[in-house]
Image (cartoon, rainbow over all chains, first blue to last red; front, side):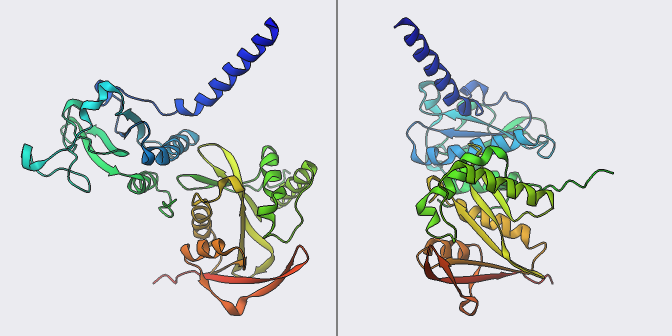
Length: 173
Length: 182
């Protein structure tokens, strides 16, 4: 009986580890890590249970796999990290920027309700929707700043494919 | 003197990779060619045994050794699964003209993969061929949409007939001609 239980536990452990393997490729960042990674990189924002995020997740993982598969060919291409906006500590930046209220200037995104461009600290980001993609990297003055890249499945797909010089065809499901 | 080794440099899209088949694809190949839903549109009988998949992959490997890349695997990069094949018809080989063929495992239908792979493959073929033909049987209308989405144009005068599982089927053909550079 005991032996049987050990076998089952071992099997479950191996199975669970195997299942988690793919997820590990995408590193989740905490808010205070958003601006502290090396080089220029993408940050992908998602939430648990967000249908668009579920749809784009294989694309994000595929992107990482492509970078890893041929480091020489894709040298200098941006790594991608993730931030889960469902996590309590991260929720505060999941908010809508309104120019009429804050009067900082024009926001970004299709509805201009993101505030990302030029931001240098995570606490000042306004991420209005998921899935969405920003990039972080040094500007001409070597300040590490954020830049809005894309929101939604199609736009993120196009942006990542374009970044790797891959065909842009067929983003649709 | 060593023999020349022929290789095919894989073609990538963001989700897929078109690459040479490997021995490890045997299970996926069997899954594809033993599925009656997939096979209803193909002019060969469904595989009954895994051995048939092994032999088919051996034949493909032999072709590769001779520099013939008629059949290539389509891999989902994220899962590393072989999801189907894409390639050229062995029957249609005229100077500057080729015919694309493809099939996908049922589990990977309706994900936009056929169009994504075809678009990338056609872009590659256009370096060699000025005319690319694609076709489908009447029942497989989805394949017609995929061809049109990738820039193929319906060409009824190229339509043919083919016997599939004992039934004569009308094959609807399409062509894509390389744009002349200015």
